[in-house]
Amino acid sequence: MLTGHPLLLYILVCVSSVLAASSPSTRSFENSAIVRTFELGGSLVHVTTTYAIKALESGAKTYTLALSSEERRKASWLEVKVKGQEDTLPIVEHIVGSNKPYHLIDVKLPKALPVNGTLNIVLETIQTHATEPWPAKAAQTEEQAVKFTTDLFVVSPYSTAVQRTKLRTLSPRIITYTIPENLDQFTSEATASKSSATVTYGPYNNIPPSTNTAFYSKHQMPVTIHYNHDHPILEILTYDRSAEISHWGANLNIEDKIHLFNAGPELKGHFSRIQHQMQAFYGKPPPHVLPAMNLDLPPNVRNVYYYDLIGNVSTSRLRVAPPVPKGSPVMKHSALELRPRYPIMGGWNYTFTLGWDAPLGDSVAWDAKNGKYIAEIPVMLSFPGAVVNDARINVILPEGATDIEVSVPYPAVENTISTHTTYLDSTGRPKFTFIYKNLTTKHIANIYVTYKVSSSAHLKKPLVVATAFFSVFTIALITRRIDLTIHPKKKAK
Image (cartoon, rainbow, N blue to C red):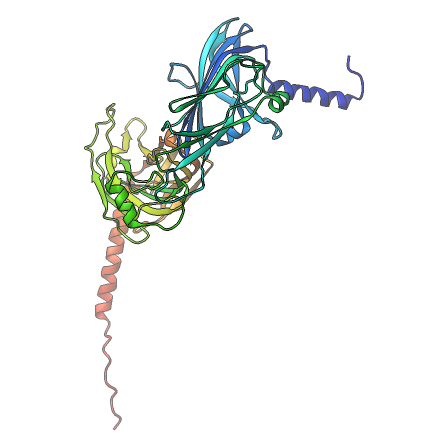
């Protein structure tokens, strides 16, 4: 029985409740096996972790995952599924103190498991800015090497019978990797092994619950892999998209302002155009040089333009795909090959603007039941292997749009509503701005906007045009009747 001051008792009860809410019971589940796989790239690292779980209590319906704080900070995309199924499972992230080296995530299982019931769940994350070029500088003829570091053990609030960690690279040319020591408690075999382009850590057996300071201080350790990477490491520092809907022109105009950065090793020495052409001729371009990019644009685009800070860039090719019927499962894209004015070396920037027009009917539909238009606006283009650090998506609706509803595929860091005024506008157009950070190819989705445009709003544009034309005509008519001739001054008699 507790005795003492009532306020002290109250504080102890509250602290105990918080700890119970943030610390899952280690007796609810156990992990039969955990397999974590890193697909190592340049700017992005795809991590897949499969948990074979077993319920120790009847009615267990919430499983708790654990990530290191550093891994959660780098994970810009995260989802949990049952292995072999498409639907994602709902998750709730815990608020863990800043002094904790791990992050907890509650996963709601599709159904409660009985005692000894089993299930395989898969956690997928995309880590951004997780690798670094090493060495940090490379000459034009040298190769590109990358270094990646992660924790050895997959932490979990439950005991684990066996676990493995695999690190896969695109090239089998792995320079070095960490070989852990002092792991006799968990394995009697080799602690790490390499096979072609894969380094495997484990199997490690009989791992106790590891979301505690004691395990971290005694057993957890970093492992590093140093490998050759044969593709440019790209980052989009800023991505500014403006999508403008025009009903009078039956047109959707999209314009992207892109600040591209080659995050590979910085160029050591001077750039040689002759050396670059010789490497291209022999089919051995350096991996840290970007000579061109291939982008997928929507089908049926027109009036495509591409220019940089100097002006129009003509070294590009476009193959336009025909329109795709609505509801068709076949996805077609217009292929655009962009070739900058100069090859982009490591540490170099390139800023350019890309825009196009598309028929409005391909992106906007009419809902006769609700009397509303439904617009489908893609968030961004696909930049394979690249991360978009900061993105600003602007959706500009027709003048006079009302009853506006917006549905975003994922929450924005910030969103604002303003008025955009362009030529021949009277009151301006509604403009929605969404701010995002660390976008990847997994974030390619659509923003849906529903709105109404009344008949009077449709007539506003021709009235403004007619008023402007009539005003110019009136001013011209008045000007013709004004005598601006300079008459000579009459002499006095």
